[in-house]
Image (cartoon, rainbow, N blue to C red; front, side, top):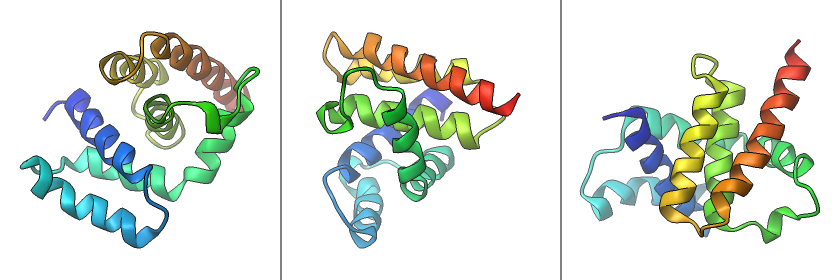
Length: 137
């Protein structure tokens, strides 16, 4: 499976999980995915799903600190899930260039979100990428 398709799986998992509250429910979302979609979960998609879930507070704080005149609770679930995947990759998947993570998040936002979301996702992720680069140098 291509990385892009694995990101789509991770997005679908995270989007479904955005409606649940507990770790037990996260496991149910994950375990039911293969049955509901009749497809095996890719290893990368699994790593991203669990990585985002385990680091959600840190990821959301980084997203929140880079929003301009906006609150996290007002961002659509589509935009938020795509940004969470990209930020996770920027922080924890060092072999993936940040530009690729941002680009693919924008592509997923184009596929699943409203017409305004890709530009918004791109702007926020660009700011986050600059912040991460500044803090690591």
